[in-house]
Length: 382
Image 1 (cartoon, rainbow, N blue to C red):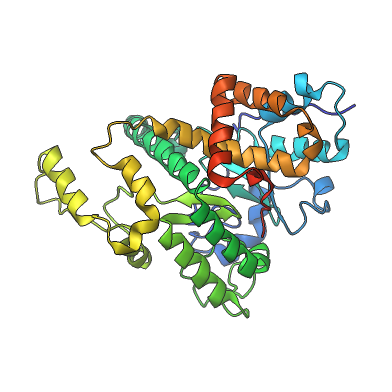
Image 2: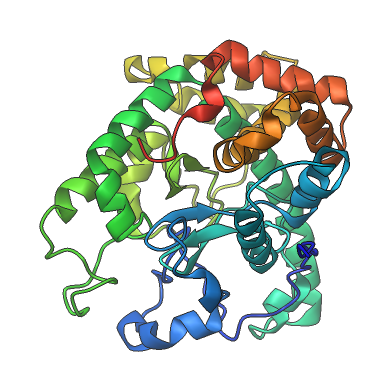
C-alpha cells in the first residue's frame, strides 16, 4: 500500500542557530569555526533518509521536493483514480517531501544537504528563535512584529520577481548557457559558496574548493550571472534567490562590491534626521535610476515603477513562480499523470493554491504564451 504523505509543521528547533549569508543549500557558510563543526553538521540538519540516498535521482543530484499536500491532491484525489504511474518514485517523493515539511525553508536536497529557499512557502520569524539567543521577551516580541511585517512584503515581491524571471526567455536562455557550460561543476560544488570569501586556513575539501581546477572560473561565472539578474544567489538549477533590501546598520565589506553593481549601498548616519517620506524616496529613486546596462530588466522596472498603480501583478507572478516550479517537476518525473488529464491536474493545483480553476488555467496559459508549448519540458540541468 502506498504511503500517504503527511504535513510536517517543521516544529523542531536546530541545536545551532546558524543562518547562512549566501548559502541556500549545503553547509552553513558564516560559521566562524566551520572547519571544526563540519563533521557534525549533517546530524544537526534534516537530511536524506538512508534508504533514499542511493536513488539515481538523488545521489549526486539536485532533488527538489514537492509539498505533501500537493502530492496528495495530485495523486490521491480525483486525478489519482485508476491512474498508472511509477509507484516507487512516488514513494520516494513522499519520503523526501515529509523531510522538507511545509517547504517554507527546505525545498529539496543536494549531496544530502537540504536546499533552502523562502519563496515556496510562507515563513515567519518566531519569538522563540530570538529568545533562544538570549533576547528578552519584550524585545523579541517587538522585533518579530517588525521583521514579519517587512519580510512578508519583501517575500511577495521577491517571489513575484522570480516569477517574472522564470517566464522571461532571455533569463532562461542565459540560464541554459550557464548550466550547459557549468552544470557538472554545479553538481560537484553546489552554489552555496559562490561569491563568498573562503579563508585559506580552511582545509581543502567541500568547504574550501578554491584549490580545485575550474573553481575560480565557475565561481566567477555564477556570480556574474547573479549580479546581472539581481540575485542573491541560486538555490540550485532554475531556482533563483532574488536580492532583497538589506536593512542593517552594517554590511560585510566583502559584499559591498556586489551590492554596488546590483543596486546601491546607502549610508545614512544616525546623526542625521530622516527626511519626509517622499523626499527620501525620490533621493533613492534618483540614485537607482536605471542605466544602459539594465535593458534586460526593463519589463520588471515597468511593473515596479512608482507611477504604476496596478501593483496587483505581484500576487499572480509570485504564484506563477511556485506553480511553474512544481508543475515542471511533476511533468518531468511523472509524465503519465498528464495524459489526457491536464485539466484535472490543474484542478489539484488550484485547490493547493486556494484559487479558482479559471485562475490556475490562466496562469498556465500565460506561462505557455511567454515560453511556448513545451515550456515544462526544459530540463533542470541543460
